[in-house]
Image (cartoon, rainbow, N blue to C red):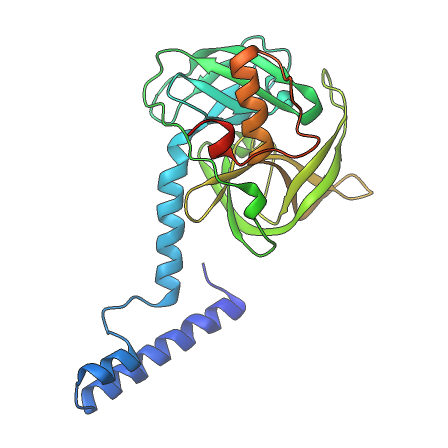
Amino acid sequence: MLTGARGGALAAVVMLAAALAGCAGSGSGSGSNRAETGSASEPPAVAVEEGAFVSAIARVLPSVVEIRTRTGLGSGVVLNAAGDIVTNAHVVGDGAGLQVLLSASAAPVPASLVGIYRPDDLAVIRVSGGPGLRPATFGDSARLVAGDVVLAIGNPLGLSSSVTEGIVSAVGRTVSEPATRGTPGVTLPDTIQTSAAINPGNSGGALATLDGNVVGIPTLAATSQAGSAAPGIGFAISSNIAVSIAAQLVSTGRVINPCSDGCQAPDAADGR
């Protein structure tokens, strides 16, 4: 829904399109004139943006799953066709009673724990034989800059396949994640700060760009000094860290090379 300044921008686009149509009707219709004014078949900028949102969501959403445990729920992102799924360590807890609801399944399927790396709040779980496994495409989080449009996709408050939109507010943030029941507090390096809403249940899901690449794993939202949610301030683990750690957990069940000195882009880290 367009409001405020964006609503004004839409009105300006519509008025400009009408003005251009009037010029085309009274002009000579030559090729050079069309090149200067644009074609009437070209969609307005707002329609182009909406199309990019729809396309990105359609590409990423089938790769985002709902993870259920005995104590709560969260989200995960499909890593590969073998059924490996990356998520947050605090989502899986001790790994007992794991179930996964895939985008193409009507009922959850059992999952097993592959490995946990609590210093980066990451874990990998695995499902076998589930329908519709579609691995995500991971992008290079090192290329993100403040102002990039991003989408947070997951299952906030149990509302499956929900999408929120925002921008990259900052990169390279170091944030502290408080301890919860069964999980120690950790300090997360090189996180992505975003204005896209992140709520309970979004953890472990996808932070994606408009080209459909997953560039982060939404993990926590900021709180004020009074303990209430701070709107528009959320943090995601960068995809370069997430994919590197996940690949090691899949290969060996543990992390041999932490990302303290930086991680490769996903296409180099996972061999794609």
